[in-house]
Amino acid sequence: MIDKRIDSLTAAVADVFDGATIMIGGFGEAGSPIELIHALIDVRAKDLTVINNNTGSGHVGLAALIENGQVSKMICSYPRTLGSKVFPKLYRNGKIELELVPQGTLAERIRAGGAGIPAFFTATSVDTPLAAGKEHRHFNGRNHVMEYGLKADFALIKCKCADRYGNLTYNKTARNFAPIMAMAATKTIVQTGTLVEVDTIDPEIVVTPGIFVDRVIAISDPVQESKLIAEGMSYPC
Amino acid sequence: MLTSNNLQLGWRREEMAKRTALDIPDGSYVNLGIGIPEMVAQYVPEGREVIYHTENGLLGMGPAPTSENSDPDLINAGKKAVTAIPGACFFHHADSFAMIRGHHIDICVLGAMQVSKQGDLANWSTGEPDDIPAVGGAMDLVAGIKTIYVITQHCTKTGDPKLLEFCSYPLTGKAVVSRIYTNLAVIDVTSGGFKIVELAPGISFDYVQERTGSKLLIDHQYND
Image 1 (cartoon, chains in turn purple, cyan):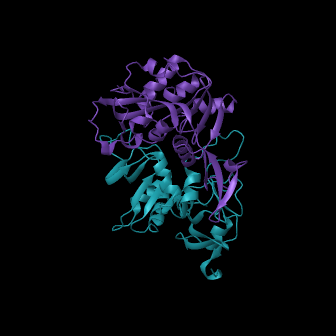
Image 2: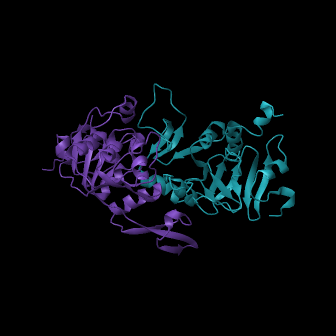
């Protein structure tokens, strides 16, 4: 029997090891698997490389994971979102490494990693500092830069609805990086708003096929990052 | 002596957005950057149907919601709450940037820190040592979308020109900008350099030239 359901947040992330590379879904707070991130703070894995579009806001979620000293490197496109205080301070003090990647290149690197494509060429970033030192080639009269596919040991993502096979659907723009991160990680760990019986989700609308998912935990009433920030919350308290 | 009228020379932000909107044809798929570019959607002339793309995974972005129908899972690239129009669709980030990189989006309107006479754009980093570099989707947008419009104040807050011979800040893309809408003029990037297409009411060619870091052409001087 295939049953990817798990009922403890700590158990869901217990095997995250020191030095692991972790993709974390979300674009700002939309799609951020905040309960799974807080569980990762509880299990204290350190020296992590985290791949996310941003670096978190306030003192909860991804920002709290960074503030707790567990992240040694961020791979992201936009590390200074409104309300992002933790990362900029550490970065200016040389306490955290940054690999800045254009957002579309980041998405395609993750997609490629999950699709078994080791590298690809794109015109994005040609003639800019972000292309410095990278292999260039001309195709169709235009210069392109080589970018590598990205893989991870774990992906932490959030969805709206899941079944025990790991078939997933999402909510609006909270989908963002989750489907491609699910493909690119060795172990994909999902928090879902609803867990339903197999055959409840119409096969025509499954966004992430269950083959890309390893663990599913139901978090029926997830906290909202912006509300926690407005209330001045920090994690761990 | 300066009057309050003189302090507000040229077009206001809304008027810059309105002027830009006139150049968005019916049936276009458009990506709008953060800031003044977001305002363009409010001013597209009646009778034109335009679909707005936001790179975090929505085609068919509508206006800001009321507080009752605001959803933290429905935001734009600037992470502000938006709505989805009837007929909208959601997709993941790789598909969203395939629309951009694959030349499916017709027009992109962006802000700028500097633009060069060749159409080079700098809008992501000052390159200063204490700057936290943050690029977002800007490099993907300028590399993948054929028509790049820039809306910007003509000068920086300290009065320095933003339209230059060469950008001194790190580039977002080389030779990518087609047209610039400033508070003083509409300016095309041509093979001969910046060309004035239209002046804001009450603004003279010389006034704009004094505030521009490269020689300006005007229609009758320039044979394209």
